[in-house]
Image (cartoon, rainbow, N blue to C red):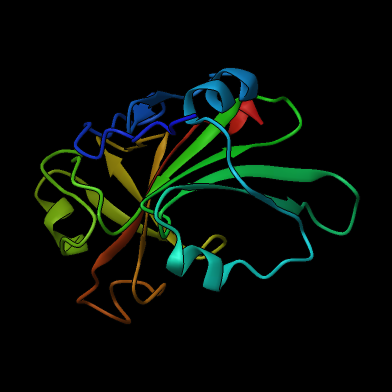
Length: 171
């Protein structure tokens, strides 16, 4: 069986979609689309596996100290990552280096400050990521991880490493 190649040029739509996948899709439907993959359990260090990966792999990780598991599909070295928790619905799509789709003309590899043309860029120290604010409201469904994981005041020049499209209510 041939594995699905994600759409690496699809626009990033906060709280909705990326890479040809839509938030809210069921684990079974996404599994059918992605195809057969090799799965790695919580006890397996996957860093080296992801560095050499040229397709999809499945990753199982423990949530906290309990027995609950987080399931994810990772394409290549995290170019696209799809996340599922107990609800069995796709709640997060993360894109990294090698993804070319854009949000507001900004993509992975761009300077984080380029978002300041349209938004206030806020550092979220609880999750070490950046959120966007416009007209006094946080833009939900999107966040940015950089190479520093520090506020712009502490590190003014930061490059976007990952963009997360998510809907936490689907967990």
